Image (cartoon, rainbow, N blue to C red):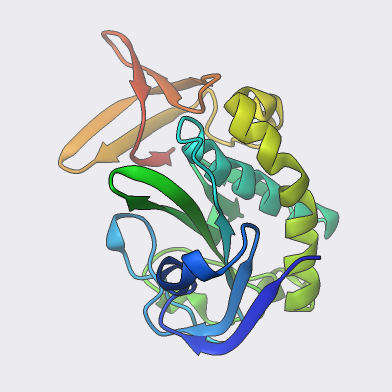
Length: 235
């Protein structure tokens, strides 16, 4: 039976699981109505006002090879869940979900290490559900409510997990190749000119493909570059 710990307010659902992972079973989920210190990749602030769905999943695994692909699996499952509500969602590599070129979901995965050994993976998810006025959060964003869809947060959480949980073990064992076709079908930038920023470095070219490992392949003027991490924008 799925165990969900629900809180009215936390600093961060990821932080809670990092602190308490040893006492919790693999597959445990922590949900908060509000996060006071929500964060995204590169330690960016994730504005976590009331009305959003904020949750983290604890996965105890020592399979480190495909950890990044679990994040992509979660993004795909969120995208597929939104499609059930006739929301034309798409994926922004590696793990954002967009609607109308605006962010509706962000995902942050973190590993828990003990003596340099991976003990757990925590996948944190923020979905904009019922918020309004998201133009003020510092980046183009949208909520389900602003798309004309009203949905119960607990129902949405259950639907996402119903898609995610059955596929975790197979992705841990076999990696991104199991998701690749589904992912590419929803990757809006495929075949388009993109800019990928990683720190101070920016790579420009055509988003030619997503590899069997889940990395982004960009064709520049000089070569085919394999991108492992970075922020993608496209025309």
